[in-house]
Image (cartoon, rainbow, N blue to C red; front, side, top):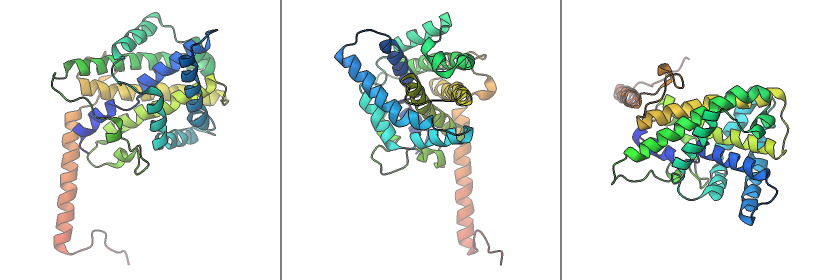
Length: 287
C-alpha cells in the first residue's frame, strides 16, 4: 500500500465528521414529539450502534483502558459494516450542506446542549475545538473534491482500505512499511473519532454511565483526534487552514514523509541483501 494509494481510500472511510453529523441528527430528532417511520428506524439503528460499540467504550476503567477499548472497536471489521449499513449513499454528496451547518455552529458558538449535558460542563472547550476542527475538515474535503480534475476517478471504496470481510486486520496500515507513521497516526485518529462518537450516542440513550474523569477523557480525545484528522485532510487537499487552528509544527508534509518512508525501506532492503550475501545471521546468537 503506497501512501498515495492509501490516502484517497481514507476519504471513503466512515470518518468522524460524517458520524458526528449523524449524532447531531439524533439529538435533533429525539427532542421531537413526532417522528416519521423512517426517522424512528434511523434512531433505532443509532441506538443499536451505541449499545453495541459505544457502551463497550464506556466500560473503560482508566485512560489506558479507554484507548484499548477504542482501538478494539476500530479494529473490528463489523464496526465498519454496521456504519455502512446505516449511512449508505454517496460519502460526499452532502458535504457542502454539512460545511454550512458546522460553520453556523462555530460562528454562533452554540454547542448542542445535549452534548454538553452528556459529557459534562468541563467538556465545553473541547467540544468547541471539535466543531471548529471538523468544520475546517469538511471545508478541506470540499476543496479537495472541487479541485480534482473532471476525469479523475472517485476515491475508492472503504473496502480498499479496511477489510470488511473479517479476513484481515482493519488496522494493518499502522504497521505497513510504506505508510509513514504520522499519516498512520492521523488515519487512526480519524477512526477513533467514530468509536468516541458512539460512546456519546450511548450516553445520550443512557445505555451506559460515565464518571467525570471518563467524560473529560472522551472530550479531550474528541478534540485531539479531530485535529489530527484535520492535519491530514489539510495536507491532502492543499487548502489554507488558519494557523491558530492548525499550528505549523502540527502540519503534515506528505511529500517529505513519503520520500522518507521510501528511503527507510530502501535502506532496510539493502541491509537485508548485504546480510544474505555475507552468509552471517542478521541477529547473531549471544551464546
